[in-house]
Length: 310
Ligand SMILES: NC(=O)c1ccc[n+]([C@@H]2O[C@H](COP(=O)([O-])OP(=O)(O)OC[C@H]3O[C@@H](n4cnc5c(N)ncnc54)[C@H](OP(=O)(O)O)[C@@H]3O)[C@@H](O)[C@H]2O)c1
Image (cartoon, rainbow, N blue to C red):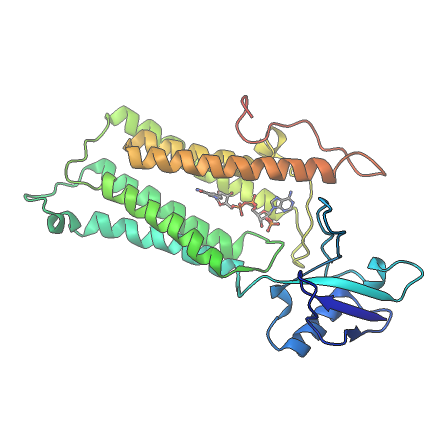
């Protein structure tokens, strides 16, 4: 069979097309494209079926494990696929490692080094107990996320565009510096002892719960690394679709109750906004996948992320 590989503007990506045998998979096609172009390795490639000009339909993405024949009409032995270069890719673990390393390193710099003296603050800096606990709580959180990245999560995609490293690092590193600056400031005013204990208590319990949610998500996939989505069940997943995000939000709420800075609450609001949008998309995807039709199970009734509101 012959496969024509064209760009979105209709230009040939591989001149003259590619001849493949009838049992070839999308993954075989991607390997040939890489051999011919010498630049676009498989994880850089997004292959879709062409859509009619003006159509509002989303193009069908070719799945690497499937046979090319599955995408051809029964009476033809020809296929045109649209190629998109996703840009330089990095492993997901690399992306997450760098985005979490920033806050893990930046926060203690503000705690241990008296940077404020260079910013014009004279006099002795007295470190309050809440500032010490906040530093431990913060570092534990990001250390846990790095460990989970390498030893817990089973990602469905191996790689992500390099540009995401810069975008995500800007987000985590700048918020890390913003919060660390305020919580460790020499003029920082601690909250009451009781409020601090309630806050850190909530943060601690939420981090443990968040870790447990990640274990439950991990167990939805086999170690073979095959993607695919299952209905998350057990613990808080019996109530909300994205229990891991719910516990993440509770952890930052606890941190902010204990430390009480505007910077911390701004981060909480932004993070909650991002996670809510992602949770809505994940909830929609699971409801669509598990629609109760053709023998598929029906997705149970659940809140999305923040019961009883959403
Ligand atoms: N502070 C913030 O701004 C912020 C923002 C986002 C996340 N976080 C934290 O980072 C953690 C990880 O974030 P994330 O967005 O990567 O979480 P996530 O999308 O819920 O995924 C965690 C892991 O579980 C897998 N997974 C999720 N739902 C699944 C299902 N139904 N069936 C099978 N596998 C499933 C995911 O696979 P895929 O690879 O297919 O996705 C991924 O490997 C969060 O839980 C949260 O603690 C913090």
